[in-house]
Length: 552
Image 1: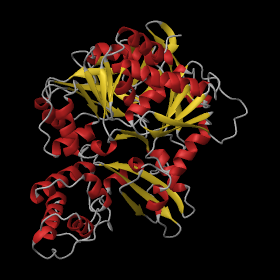
Image 2 (image 1 turned 30 degrees about the vertical axis):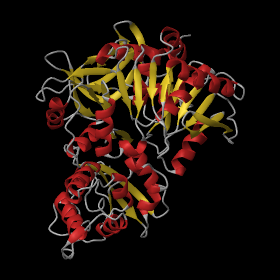
Image 3 (image 1 turned 180 degrees about the horizontal axis):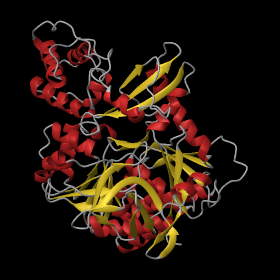
Image 4 (image 1 turned 180 degrees about the vertical axis):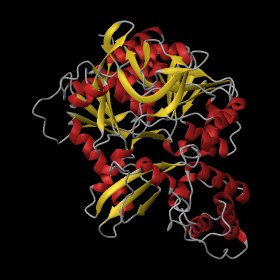
């Protein structure tokens, strides 16, 4: 059986001294093979082939080593989300029951730990599985997507052809390891003789630092979600003229395409659910007037049923969901394909063929959304809210879906008593899944059929009680006046309370980068985004700036 490890080993034999990765130091193909091989032997000494190994790392280079090492040991790898709250992480681990945990100590250094969880009555054999990634589940329980070696190897080969990556080219690796697009950044280069540059987490969160890294590294390919590109362009990024930009994970809008086209050599729109292995289609965007999902990648078959639902088939399909036979049967039924009766994956996405035979995205059929690149089942957020003892019912909607730069989740709840629901969610859901606002209603509107009237709720999204705190303008002069004015302009307010939280007052990741640019331009020094996160009020940020001895 061919695995990504065997493909990379073959590349090591061809170009052992070529650069494979740039992180804290530069690594050759020989280096990465030695690191992954040694770690693979350590894994094999503790876990039988076909076991599941959890990977707890944030460094992208460490992630590549850990994934390859697990494959070398004949084990499937489960990359964990380090940003996930402890309760959600515990749910994932309890569901997956990995045999071993690889805990990152330093770059490419790991401690191997027993999971501490009892083995399930029937331990699945994952010998044919390359990795397992957990996605949002409508019942409140995340579900693990099992992707096989054949699917991964075939998909990487297809991506090498389209959008394309050649030997000696380089890719910027910045996606979190718990997102499958990270595999395109880390593994695709290693299968073709190219290299990747690992982006530190703090650099990814700071548009100005990220722009400096791009200028220094001069990558050939940069992959990111539309939300990230909006944040970057809002910060004043002038682009990377020699780079090909890949954008996926959520809808590419004409306005964003218009911003990106002059900033790159090529712009590609890529699409694909986790269940179809990273990406399934790709379109080169030459004009903002024509945005499509493009054509299927090599090995991907496309069907569109009478409802307009896109169904995928071919070698790139996942095996299904870990320990969820019923859900697997529902989402991966047998279908009539040009090759006869074959398994298909029902994406839940509505599409149509455009006049040029490119797929056009029309929306979702179910209650799943994409927000800033994160795939979210609204039912999962609702289920977690309803787990609170003081909440009898909850409905979550996406507000401003047609304006991705300000889109946000809004929750409507029926409560028995006052409760800190944001704190409850903060302990159980990642930040990407938490509503920006929660409105308590005496009861939820109903349709004549007795179902919750989501349309009525959507119409009334401008509910009362969520006004931005407004106060007299802060005292003029110096840093305080400059920070307050940057806050006011960014949030389009007449005045702001110095203790009002930026995000509660309507701030978003895109507006955060706008605020950073205004502050940095006005003060003449860079104000790191992580410091705005840590000090999200005017008063708090002014105190930080003064402590840092910024002249006033």
